[in-house]
Amino acid sequence: MSTQVDQPAYGLGTPASRPGYAERNATHWRRNLAVCVFGSFTTLVSLSMLLPFLPLYVQQLGVTSPSAVIQWSGVAFGATFFGTAITAPVWGHLADRYGRKPMLIRAAIGMAVVMSLIGVAHNVVELVVLRLAAGLVGGYASAAIVMIGTQAPRERAGWALGILSTGALTGNLVGPLVGGFLPTWVGIRGTFFVGGAMIAVAAAATIFLIREDFDRQSDAKSKAPKTSAPMSAADRNRIGALLVTAMMVLLANMSIEPIITVFIGQLGVANDHVARTAGIVMAASAFGSLLTAARLGALADRVGSWKVIIGCLLATGLVMVPQAFVTHWWQLAALRGLMGMTIAGLLPAIAKLMRQTVPERSTGKALGYLQSAQFTGQVVGPLIGGQIGAHVGLHQVFFVTGSLLVLCAALNQWVQSRSAH
Figure 1 (cartoon, helix red, strand yellow):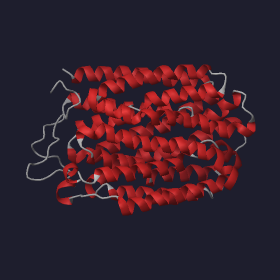
Figure 2 (figure 1 turned 180 degrees about the vertical axis):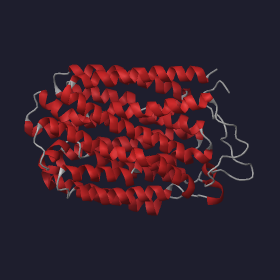
Figure 3 (figure 1 turned 45 degrees about the vertical axis):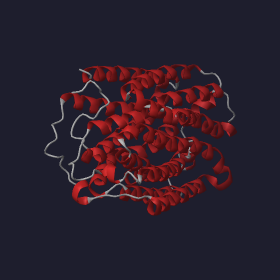
């Protein structure tokens, strides 16, 4: 194996007589990137704008105990990501067989329908079931990563995935802000109808603007070329570390989401301003990531993904700790913004390394597993945060997640050192 650990490991070529999928889509990927950025933005605005008022909606649906509100909010929030974690590898595999565009269309239409139905939920169980359904049939941002991750040239993959991440992060930035204000104008239930309409616009853009040259005869073959070497132990270790890291990134980012409204209330914010303030604090992380995602993705193209991954993990873990000691909401917002800046380089670098490690015909499936790992983190994070916040204390959430990130950095350093030899 080459000592350049960011280089393709095996089986990445295609027969010389047949252009590969990325080569055939070389004229489409920039246009598709622009549409996918827009689609990821609109879908994630719709998904994230419920965060500031989710506990309030849970109360509106009949839950009264404060601890029960926290726990049900965590379950309802994590249900979408649990559904996506289950189905992401399946959609990734189908993307390899039938093309990436059909998966984008399926995700957008499914999410538009389910998001609207959430607005007519009668009880908290229906809310959880519909949030689960949104994850099972949705996942537009995941499908977009599969498309751009397989179409962009390898030397531009980090930058392209960073730009795509910027669109998603902007959606996560705008969503909580919208969620802090929109219910005042259209009501909590009306907010879900607005979200469904936004995703429908993304579906239309995907149908009419996305272009894909997908050859079922060559691209849909389930087996790698016979000339490919078997996957080495170092490659398996690398993939395992990347999957664990992807899970930890989202776990760290989402661990305080279900408790943040309660936490802000303990910082002295008036009850009638809690939802709006929570929206600002939640948006701070996405705003920080928005500033650095594309730059860190390009940095991974230049200096190597491992260095970016390890450095960002350590920095994010350290920034988690002082969040437990804030005394004012603006301090928490500033630290969340700083954390967003450090965490932004992780997912583009991880996706870039994953693409370089697997055969081209399996890229969609591999990125699907990567998405599954990420959304597993989005499930586990809110559950851990909700349980620790309800039974141990809100401050301990920050200590636990920070420690896990530092341990994950050590794991990546170990895997990188073994891959380099």
